[in-house]
Length: 400
Length: 111
Image (cartoon, rainbow over all chains, first blue to last red; front, side):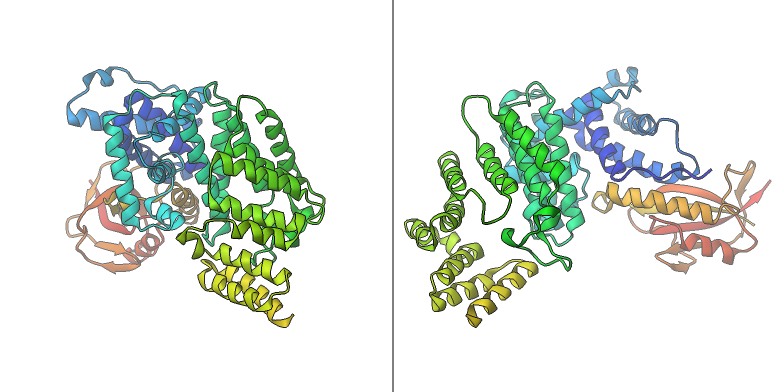
């Protein structure tokens, strides 16, 4: 009698699928109603299924949610035409298309990127407002407001942009943000973060299968994601402490993901111009393919950061380039690159800026400056593991 | 004794469980239903109605009171029919109902 266990994340996936397929059927301007319906159907399932799983759970959910939407519309006494057509089809292919379509709807250029991310997390990935707030370091109220503004925009302008190729860059950007949230945010729960990365990877793979979405940039982004994901678990030691790239046990990197990263990188090498994803995937590839930290091709990494600076200028790329330069040509070269930079105010208060300066001065034997910068970095470090790492480094300098 | 369990949840959309919570809830329902397979009736009993003057209680967050049964902005999320030898046993079962913050217990009678 007892129903079997469901696959991990099954409810979350189903929610995204249901909202997508229902929104397409009833109109994206009714997305909120479709979300409610999907939520209701899943909630029913939690109680009904334990006494016996339906033959086709996906179809069951769809039927319940679909009826819920119809009930609501009937109550509103409008849109009679929808009442006549009752679909119960649940073809996998169609659903996949719908999830992708909704991703494009979320990528509305009139909605700020952070709000697009919130909308995608809520609607496609099935995170609650509270969970999103926790992940993005925003208050629940702020997340709620973002959602409402984004939805009210969609209510007015939702029907036209199904798989508009012009929105692919926005979709890629959203997936990139989603992945980064998982990969490098200070969210302490590693399982939650891993989930975000997997979700971004899954959606990017889906985008790649689409004629409009299968651009060279999509492969480049996938490559970047695979290379980073390969190192996900090796970045922490047994007690959750952060490990620097040079300290990581390279045998713990996921070889299968590295191979997939390479495969996408090769496929991305077509088209007119490289994107920032190409350059970043290139850097990640150099790290993943180097047999050891010492044998890393720093010259190539310096070149890739120069490319990145041209495509998407940011002083952070200069900072990264300086680190690579220091490994390639020595700490003086690294410092010179940083000194040549016109440093914006926000960067001066950024802990990695001081951490880098501290480390370069340490290598040059300038103990006082090394101490001063590392202390400032420690004071500004946002998370506990990073503080621990910097304290470790501070002791090393003090003992030298 | 036969009881109706009425499950209520907050109507606030911001307090809706996330899919992850619902998936966990599915597992909890499964084990709850397994544990009380004897007491939970698989089918709604025919010809039943509320027993006049019968036992009634509400179990909210582990606290059992005799009312109020509904707090502002609660919606009914489901129900079960339970057969036990006492109200106390029914309350024990109600306390372990997953996901819903509030369970209203009503004694039923057959007619």
